Structures are given as C-alpha cells and as structure tokens.
Length: 466
Image (tube, rainbow, N blue to C red; front, side):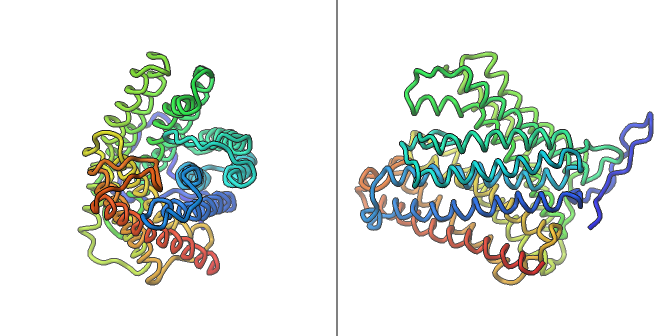
C-alpha cells in the first residue's frame, strides 16, 4: 500500500485552486500495525459493551427485570456500558485514524498510549466484579466509586493525552493543493485539537471543583465542560466518516474542499467556548453550565446539515453500487437516519424523562454507525479482507433498525413521564401504553445487540481473510 501525499507548496505561493473533490483518506503505510492495535482495542470495547448492554435491556424490560438482582446492578452495568461504547470505542477509532495519518515521528509514543488505554479499559471493565462501588450516573462519563475503576479511568485519560499530543505533532498539516484528502486530514487534525481542549477542561475542573460537593454533584460538575467539548470530537469524526463513505460508495460529493475545510473550521471554532466558560464563570454556577450547552447547540450543529445534505445528494445521484460498496452505503444511510432521528427527538424534550436517552442514543448511535462503516472501509487498507456478502450489508440495517425501535420506545414512554436512569420497580409503569413503550424499547435493544454482534462477526471474518 502506498501512502498518499499532498504536493508540496512552492516557496512564496499560496494554496492552488481546488481540484474536483475526491474525499479519500490519507494513509501512512508505516503505521498499519499501530492502527490495527487501536482497532483491536475498539472491537474489544464494543464486545464488552455488548455484554453489559444485554444486562441493561433485561433490567428495563417488563416481566424480565424482576429476575435481575436489583437497581444498583442496572446502574453499574449502565456505567460500564456507556464508558466502553462511547468513550473507549470512539477514542480507539480516533486512534486508528490519527495513527494512519501520522508520520513515523514519535511512533513509540503511540504504542505507549495504546498500551495505557488498553490497561485502563481493562481496569474499568473488571471493576464491577473485582472492586465494586457505588455507581454514579454523571452525564458524559459516569463512574463507579471504586479505586480500580477510577484508577483505570485515570490511566485511560493519561493515555489519551499522550495519543493526542503525538497526533498533533506527527500529523502533517494540509499543504500544497487543497484537495479532498487534505480537507479530511484537516478534519482529523481538528478532532485532535478539540480532544485536547476536552482533556484540558477535565484537568481544569479537577483543579477547581470543590471537593466538598456530594458524590453525584461532584462528578457531574467535573465532567460537564470536558464532556461537552468531546461532542465536537465525535461530530468531526462523524463528518469525516460521512464524506469518506459517500466517496467510497461511488458517489460524487457536491462540496468543494474549501467549503469542507470551512465547515470543519466552524465546528472546531465552537469548541473554544469551553475555555471561555471557565474564565468567565465559576464551574459550579448555572451560567457556566449554560455556556457549554449553548456552544454545543449553536456551534456544533452548523457544519452537520451541509455535510449530510452533500452525502445524501452523492448517494441519490450515483448510477450504480458495487458489491464492495454496499456495506458502506448501508452504514452511511443508517448513520444519517439515526443521527437525524436523535436530533428531532432532542427538540421535543421537556422535563427529565426517557426522551433524553432517546435523543442521545439516536445521535451517539449515528456516530457509531458512521465509524462502523469507516472500519469496513479501512479493513483492506489495514491488510485484512474486504467485508462482503449479505451479512456485511444487513448488519448496519439490523443495528440501525434495532436502535430506531429502541429510541421510539423510549420516546413513547417519555410521553407518559417514565423517568430516566431507573429500572425495575422504580420505573412505575402504570398504563398499557407505558408498558408497550418500554417493551418496544426492550425488543429494539435486543435487535441492536444482535446488530452489534454481527459487526464483530463481519470484522472477524475479514480479519481471517487477510
């Protein structure tokens, strides 16, 4: 595999006019092994998350939850499920992309970061069994108050810092002709910058949040600023995936590289509301929390609509789809549908009920499906086989359909006022409508779990066919 390099910029010259946009990812052949390591970490995180999600669905499904050991068990499983399926999985795929775009500089840092992330992940996953503690359902990064879990989270955080610093110093900035690959590389660079902002916010909060706050309030304030900043990272990665998949499916994306780079820059600029919030307001104030929320709502969404529209046009105007592109097309369509559904649900939220997890499940699963499709696209570049066949095509649809049923059930139940972050008898399901909604949620969750398992099987088969 040959690395794709951008032409060098002549001295005294500015960027040349944009060529026809072809959004193909840049790859450094020397970084294949490191990228495969990050992919393995992501796959193991998804496997562990799937095992805990089985317990979650059972804990919330009427008639079945009575057989489970209790609410604390549900919340503990929820903590590990969220951290593995969002924090570890997303950052691992970011590690794949940043590694493939980085040159050979400081490669040892990359391996140290991967090792630390793997150790931290294992500590968090084993904590419920080896060192159980009180689960705290804080937004963005829920925790278990035990030494093993918090130690694992700290190790994972330090590894993330090393990964980001290595990526920012090893990924070459776009130069020469501003083409599709250069625009995508800027998007990945922007994602690394937003991650650094998020990690800085976590450290800032750790230094200034009063230790006198009770457990739930302490963790909520601690992770609020950095958690919001991480949403920009996930959004940037999703936009890169959408453009790459639309191109890989054979479509022609009607966005110039200059416009794409501008959209990435807008999404990145909004993340700098984070340090402004810390400088302007105390971390425990309502104004501090509101400024983070405002920055995410206003700045985070501006770049999404043009990119999703361009990807949809690319798919609608393509003449034919090859067999190799069908799994990528399925993942892209499912991702855009779930993300749009999550956004629409977010506009209907009133109060604190299960509409809130319906909203973020739609958006988060939209990102997950985009990254799943990108993994399918990357596997041949990593030296493995190409996902193909009915199983690879149907997997994104099965996963997407299950998650759609899951969030529709939550929205249905939220209309009756069913509360979030509860299970078993605490749900207080009185009417047939409430029972139906949560039952649909349970069935959809089971289908989604099957879709996640199919993804692991497809990738495993591709790995055997290298």
